[in-house]
Length: 201
Image (cartoon, rainbow, N blue to C red; front, top):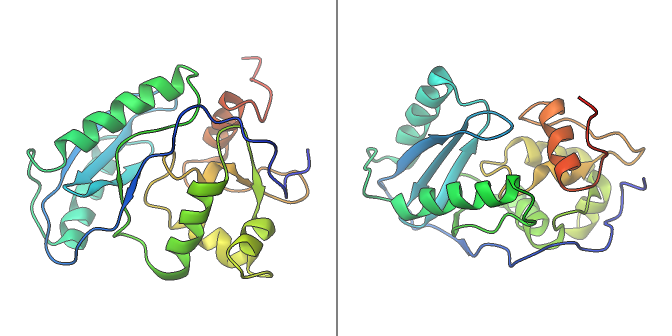
């Protein structure tokens, strides 16, 4: 597999719209949903989905809620962002059922800024379901050749994994690279998307 270039797109359905949230304190809501890769923490503001976290046991979910309260400056409000978390949960159900690209609610990009936001936007726009891209190639796409390490840091800072598919960024030599949700989770996602063979057991 030549992992420093993207294969032909295999996306089914449009990518979600993306929103830049306004500054200032904002309310938000969160849920934990079950998935084939374990429980997922989803949070949204009125602007859209703002946070996704893997392995969302009670401790992780509590930590994520505390971090969001600090970052967003507002309390959790079940009425704020309810549409976005519901739409995200439904989109995840379709994705894990093999329905192709993860098309869900608008995305609130307010938890990431600068170069990292630029990298993640390019990833979301240009690397569809069934494709992969190398760290160096992604750096070139944002006009920063030689910034592969900085791209790796941007992947680690991604607040919206799955919806902004950092699992599709791999090493040039064919290795799958690291992943905030764990290497085995990354393997499962790439297998679901047809990039890697499905595990035998």
